[in-house]
Image (cartoon, rainbow, N blue to C red; front, side, top):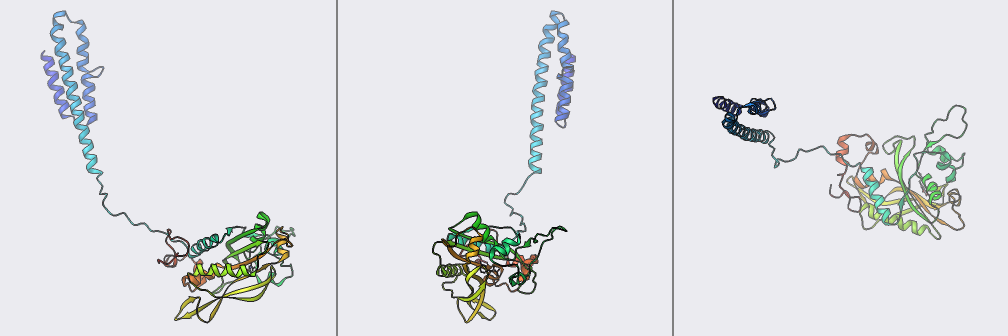
Length: 360
Ligand code: DAH
């Protein structure tokens, strides 16, 4: 019995002073584990005489339960302490304001492309695309620009390399979006109503020219489309895009190999104190080329010119972006200067459309 009292004192004391859960676990093993001191004693009960067992048995059982209960209580206490320490250390103030993160902006060209796509979509035009590296057939021949035609030189074309000995005409970086007319007609046939916004390339560089710039091509083919619909479509587009009630467009007779008749279109505007106003004043600004699609171009696109006719236009996107948002130098568009991008860029949630950009 003395031995039992000694064990009780020893283990209760070790349990009380166990500093953490691991220490407590070694106390448990030493006392109640398979080879623990108390477990071994209980095993010895079998070899005792009946009398001795009658007193030792209940005493040992009592000791075992008491130590077990003490271990459980201490374990719960230690676990609480661990949790409290974590709660204290990992405390976090959810009422603090969030850390600001630097946000990019939408480039004015991307914004304008979204705006004009939305406007033309409202008029029933879908978007067509073509490659920026184009065959000379799509970029020139199919558009009725013969090999000796001066337009090939006028366009200041970038030519791709051919392998030595390969005498086929070289591919070109497309000089305009007009080849997408051919690709779209081949793919969809008539009737067709598409726009094709995208990058184009010409060897040219000054305040109003960069070697890469953007155009949007328009094409509408049906049984009886005329210049009147071309005029309405362009006026409607300009009214929506420049956000003015009235626009006045001037159609000047011109020449493009892929249209007959052809017209260049100017928009009425005024410059007052460095401020550009669209729709009023006595100045005119050229914004696009257009015309009735040439029969040979329809044929190249696989469309029968005795059945179908329509209009096409090609509009300079960079030019109208400069006009709408008052951006004076074209080259700055493509210099990736962060200060410029922050100033002229758009918030990512700006909706493209009629009111776009007004909140800046
Ligand atoms: N492709 C011409 C250019 O880049 C612009 C143009 C003129 C496109 C008349 C057209 C058009 O579709 O009908 O200068």
